[in-house]
Image (tube, rainbow, N blue to C red):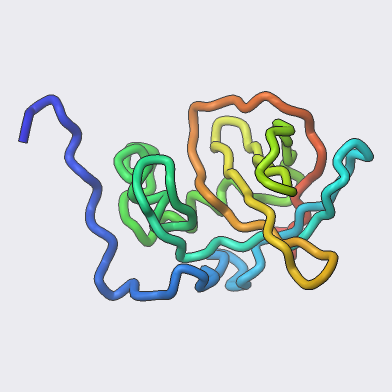
Length: 165
């Protein structure tokens, strides 16, 4: 291995054998639901809904979702930011998705729905993808989370926590 290439992060533990759609419990509340997207803008016609972090899958660079994808894409950075193991990924996401945090939309279509980004200043950002739930509702799944990028867009919602901590 070259001295100039970063080593890959620790592999995902073999004991983490959950299906990609398995919902990961919030590390502080123990709930599967991480909060709600509470729409505050009339310009945003998409409905709000529950936020879930799923086990997910990593397909390749910039392709995937959930904690597997976050770890494989950002593991080296997470270690530097104080989240040294795969098991710390939910804690990193929980530090971003907190009550009252702005939800921004860049208004870049993703099929029939808009992806949104939860912003938490220097803590980071989490991209949420909307998915249909029933005939008229939506839920939001965490696609990825990162630092060091300031998305452009308009605040269209806020995170409403299930339990205020």
